[in-house]
Structures are given as C-alpha cells and as structure tokens.
Length: 424
Length: 110
Image (tube, rainbow over all chains, first blue to last red):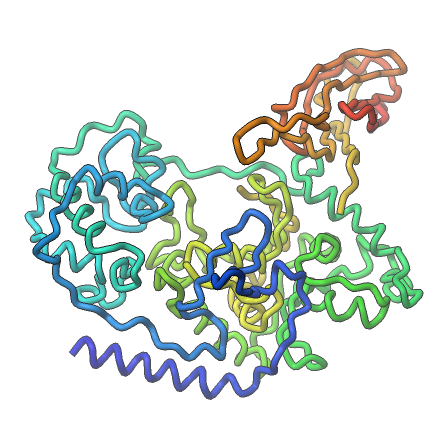
C-alpha cells in the first residue's frame, strides 16, 4: 500500500516537472571556472573542478537538481546481515564518531565526552540498546531505512554504497552496547537538546565588525571605473554607487523577460556589465560579489518585495519548490530535510543550528563567512550545501539555483534587507 | 577586491570632554600563517603579518601594541582613550614587510 502511494507521488511529481520545464531556456554559464560545476578526466579518474580547498570528488552517479536530470530516486533496498560477518563494537564506535566517513554524530547523540559536537536532527541513541531491537532490524535501518519509514531523512547508507556490510555490522554491534541509564551530563552544551543557541556576531553593518562592509564600500571604485567600452556604471546610473540603485535589489531574484529566465543581482551583473561597460563580471568573481553587495546594501532597510504573482514568477517558484523538496545526491537528502520546521529546522546538525526556511534565509546575503574570511552570495552557499549532500554542484548562475533562490526569497517578502550579513 | 591596508575606525556618535571613549578599528590584512610543505616542515619565508600598532592622539603616541602571527586575518582592535581635548586620533599598523597603514578619526565634542 505504502509503495503504491509512493509510486503515485513520484509519477505525479515527474509529470509536473516535465510539463513546466519546457519554458526554461538553455543557459550557458557565465561563472568563473571553479563555479561552473565542471568535471574533467585525468588518469582515468573523474575530478570535479571546485573552489580551492573544496573536495574534488565526483558524485556523478547520484542525481542532482538539474532540470534535465530525470533519474529516479534510488530504489528502496531490502538487506539482511551477511551471516559470516561479525560485528566489532569498538570499530563501530570509531566509525560512528568519524565525521569524514559515516557522520552519524551529525544527527544522533551517543554517550561519551568525546562525542562532540553531536546533532539533534535524528533520535538520541544514548540508550538504544535497551530497546531490544534485533540485529536484522538495525542492519536494515542502516542499509536503507525507507523500508520501515518511507519518508525518513536518514540516508540509505548501504543502498547508496557509502558504508560496506562489514561497517554496518560493526555499527549495529556498537548500538547494541548502548544501555541506560545514560551517564549524567557534565556539560549541557555537549547535548544538542540542551545546548545554548548561537547568538551571532553583533552588528553586521558596522565596518569594524564585518569586513564585508569594507569590501562592498570599496566596490564603489569599480562602480566608477570605465570598462573597455568606455563607460562605467556611474555614467548611466546617477547618484553614486551607494544610492543610485536604491529600491532595485528588493525585487530580485526576478524573471527578466530579455533573458527569459529568473535572475539574481549577481546573475544580471554578469550579463549586463559586459553589454554596457565591456567589463567581464563573471558570477562568483570577487568583483561580481562585491558590486552585488554594494547594490544590495543601498537598499538596506527596505522590505524584500519579490514578484510572486506574475505567471512566469509563479511557474518559477513552483519549480524552485520542487527543487527544494527533491531528494538528491549520495545521501538522498532534500533541502527541506534540514530547513523546514517539521523536519530539521531549529535542530542542530553537528554544531550547526539549522535555519528555518519559513523565517526567510536570504535577506542577509551576500554574507561574510567568519571561518572562510570572504563574503559568499546565496549561490556559493547553495554550492557549499552540495558537498555534504554528495551531489555535483550546478553552475552558480544556473536557472535551477536562481529559481530555488526565488522560492526561498519569497519567505523574506516584507522583511527588511540587511546586507551584508555575518555568519560562521 | 579590497586592498591590503584599508583601515576602518569607529568612535561613539557623541563624545563629551573627559569621556573615556571606546575606539574600534579594523584593518584589511592577510596576516599570513605559517605554511608547511608535504613533509610537514615549516616553509621558511618572511611571513607578512602586522607586528606593531601605534595610537597617536593630538600628535602624541598614547599606546603601542606588539602583535603576533596568531592574530586573525583582517584583525580587529578595540581600546579606550580618554578624550581630554578635541583633536585627531590616528592608528597606524606596521607589518613585517615594512608597510604601514593608517586610519584616523577626529575627536570632536558635541
């Protein structure tokens, strides 16, 4: 019964996207090479081109948000523990805590002062051994929990070949050792259910507090500089970089008829600047991000007001919403798994408090990332999410991301713009 | 892209004679960290970081700070100054490559 209902849903969703997609034109990326999501082959190995320091692992065998990626969700797999494998609880514990391999602690709490930082997206496993669950049941839960819970957030670790049968047997052996009562908590911050919430980094518009403000103010030089075509931004937009376009940014992302697609300020700069000034301003270049920040900053305090009513906007938002709920990548996660209040929002993923889409997550972007020492626009933030999902990122200026950004931004409507933000 | 050495200085909006004012300043600087090669050996080179900060008020040096490589990129400094008379407050940053960067603000009474 559950399978039939699930199949019908998949079919319906498939038809909907197939019908809507005809309106979406092909788009050649105007992003810097690291931001295009290219994959090249060297020594017979496929290597993804990504930003410096990011993983170059190719996740090509897993489905993505691309509108032309019609691959279905991975099939639900039944599995039983191979009888010849013996679980080792200490190996299982090491794997449980290994954030690079099977990041169990990202979602689940387990006993031990070295379990840090654990998350609260999944159930607390501190006393799961007391529940007298069978080895076969736990093995299936780790291999592919969708057999029992069709819409679970938990990735199908075995079915997606992230963990081997031996590793899963080890994990099961470890889980069976977790008996109550749980030891008293020495540090309330260890436990994600009692941990203090982060308080932020203070006034994001104070240039002595947020280096992104300095970056954006410096972009005024760029605003006034003539490009190869002999013109500058200031020649057509009068009033100075900090004022000329006040009131423009709250309406972005929006559908731009000339390009038949939804565009953010950054997407638009990448096509508009070369056409008018002759200056190349590729998406994700420092100049593009800085100039975008300057333009958005000039609208600080104004309420976000993206179009949600015109026919192209409605169609784009519907596609963006489908992207938000589409499960993708090695982990078979959707944006919605972490960022809707009925699933992960407001809970801890490891040490990170997950944002709630319904409160609006976009109006402080581009935002300074304190751990990266650079401002990121919404697209680079999207691309950063792709790596833990185990999905190849799309080009930063892809229509898929633009429509996803529009879907997210409509939740900010009516709330004041506050650019640049500052976040960890 | 911001250039190295941009300085931003902030004072309280209103200052009265005799107030102890909090000065906040930020300088754009890479503050290079120690780099290691593949064998884990420290690469020997002249790392560029700010090692000295001087504060002058009305032309007189009122404070100097010695800083080290362990201060973060784009460092932020805050300190207090007693505003006795109106005048110029200048903060100068010196780095190990011999460059100096300066920011200043006027202390005026309202």
